[in-house]
Structures are given as C-alpha cells and as structure tokens.
Length: 479
Ligand SMILES: *Cc1c(COP(=O)(O)O)cnc(C)c1O
Image (tube, rainbow, N blue to C red):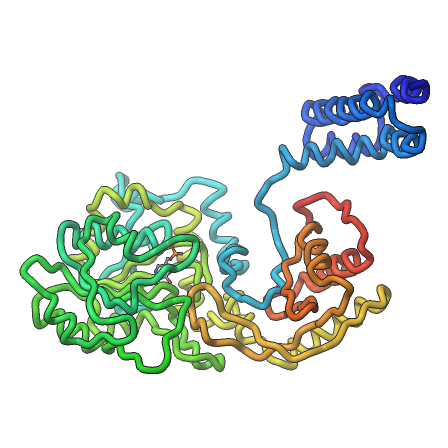
C-alpha cells in the first residue's frame, strides 16, 4: 500500500506532461485541447491502475513505475488520440499482387488524374453552369463527348458507381416491366451486392430464364411478352463457369431483343477500353464491342479496368440516356465534381493512346517480368540487415475487381519464411503505412507488381521493422 501511495504522488501533473517533448508532438499533430484531454485520460487510467494495484504484491511495482513515466503516459495518450481523432482512412501499400483490390480502394490514380481533381476541387467550376449562355447547365453532360468518341456510343452519363448505374438504368427504363436475365448471370458481386436485389429495388420485374449452366437464345425469346422492357446480360465478374456451359453471344441477344422490340441492356461490370489480351490475359469484354454489337445501354465501373476514380458509366442510345438523365434517382446517385474531373483526365489518356504508360493499373499489368524480378531482388537486398530467410520465387498476380477471375499473370515474389507468417502479416498491417501482403502455406509473400514504384524503399523499411518484431511508433498516415 505504501509504495502505491508513493507512486500516486509521483504521477506527473498535467502541466508537467504538457511540457514534455512527446506531448509537444501530440499537440502539433492533434491540437492543444485534444492533447490535454488525452493527457488527462492517460493519467486518469494510470491512477486507476495504481489504486487497483494497492493490495497486490510488490513485484508489480516496477511495471507501475514504468507506467507513470512521461514516455509511457505519452504512448497511452497517443493511442487515445489515435483511436479518436486519427483519420480512419489512410494509405496502404498493396503488396498482395491483386491489382484491382476492392478492399484496398481499387484503382490507384495517376498524376494527371489527381491534378485535374485538385484543379477542379480547389476552386469553383462550371459543374452545373453553361459558360456560353451564362446560366444553369447540367452536371450530367460532362465527359459525354469523350465517352462517345472512345466507345462509339451516341450518348453517355456518369453516376456515383456502377451498382448505381444498374439501379438507375432499370428504374428509368424498366420499372414495372419484365427484364429477362439468365440464371447463370444472377451474380453476387461481393459486399452483399446481388444483381437480383438491385433489380428488385429498381422496380423492374426480374424474369429468370435458362439453367445455371446453360441458357439459349430461345429461352429469352420465349420469355418476352407485351410487358417486357428488355433483355439484360450481366458479366459474371468474380466467378468462372467451365464444362457443359452455354450463353448466347451478345450479338445473338441483341438480334433477339430487337426482333421483338425490346431493349438490350449490358452490365459489363468492369468493362475495359483496352484489350486485356495484349497483356497476356484472356479477352475481357470491351465497351466498344458491346456498342458495336448493338447493345442499347451499357453500364460499367470507373474504377475497375478503366483505372480511374469510383464512378458508374452509362453509355448508349441518345433517347434512352435522355430518359435516364430525367429520372429522379439520378440526383441521389449524382457524381461529384472531383470525380468528373478525374474521369475526364483518365479518359483523355485513352483518347491520346497513352493509357498503358499513364494509368497505374495498366502500368502494373504491363510491368515486365525482368522489372518485377529486379524489384523483388532489391527488396531482398534491403532485408539483408535483418537476416530474414527471404527468397525470390515465381508466383502469380491477380487482376481482381470482378474482372478475369480465372486469370493471373506471372510475377516474381519475395517469400519470407518466419516462425509465424500470420504474426508478421499482422505487424505489417499495424505499421504506418500499413502493408498488406499475402500469406500462403506458412510463408509471407510480397508481390512488387502492385507496389507503386516509389514505395519500394518504404516497403523495405516496413518489412525490416516488422521482421525485427518492433512496434512501429511512426505517426499514422505518414508515407
Ligand atoms: C462490379 C460490378 C458492379 C458494381 O460496380 P461498382 O462500381 O462496384 O458499383 C455491377 N455489376 C457487375 C457485373 C460488376 O462486376
């Protein structure tokens, strides 16, 4: 009891703590008032622990002495502040080798895109203003000319994301009417997003045809009645069917739909403007191909294989896009000005024929094996001082983002053999910046393909910290 009372008296005062350099750093980062609150919280909980320890044996005295040191109190205060004030969204180094990792924010943005977003975001813009006429304009006309040029469509409109695009298209063109979809395409995209549920929300009446593995044109034709708005094709995104399977081609579906006077709606999911076959992958359906095949409306994401900011893109016949623009839901799904700016800058890369050079996801997909090998070797060399068992091994990178689920690209990996790969992965995730790697058969795997080239040195530093098993005290959110 005696030493506990002594320690209570030795607990530094708030004033004393606030003079401490460690608390000075917290003031600089979070401001004076929050740092004061944190100092009170830290000393408060230390005091409570001292009181509770009053009756315990003296062996714990040393830990309690340590606990009331300014350093330890500053650490407790930093944790308190971080839990309350630090941004929860922060940069992560993606060493997983999944290029379009939905959980890690999908497409990283290139510099021209970010500059365009900053230019529009930092000031005013003609978002909804007609500069020629000097009066109100529409936010739903931006990027249209570019999209039409790139896809061959008559008209285009941007919304918040592709799930929103599907919802809006169906609400505007098919509410209360039958929309025919193959049983093989009623997919769950992930995060609980299921095509049948979205269709139901739109008010369209989903009509399933065919079987899980085989659907024929005649299945669709038999289902078309006088209350049918259209036929819809949904990209299977994240799963792959093989074996005794059949789906009609888009051209066959377009012909059947148009012969019977109904619409052909094509939800491409990812969609791409570049041919993925040139990167050694299977051919992912291209937006231009859907338009050329005669689809009336095509929907796709801005941040999957397009490689830009999150958005849903609707392209198609002018008269239909005009109806979509007039539907009240568009207001609820409207696209932000920085997104419009980013999408435009991203599309310009395609128009200029420089997508592969300037859009990060294409750069990653196009990185040569020799470059990947050189980077992996450099990472390994950077780990020499921690004497980890790091080896160069062959592996595969994934596309992700609901595109090409069965496809992967050869890569070179850094394989780390440690006592517990899971524990190492957890330490990497706890770092600043956090690193997300892959654990496979008890080894931790690092794929340089998805690590931005300027992050290699930071990655080495984070790997060294994690391998030494040291806590990473760097301030969160720094790069
Ligand atoms: C990914 C995907 C969506 C949803 O797109 P988001 O941009 O994530 O909203 C819709 N349909 C298909 C087929 C998809 O693959």
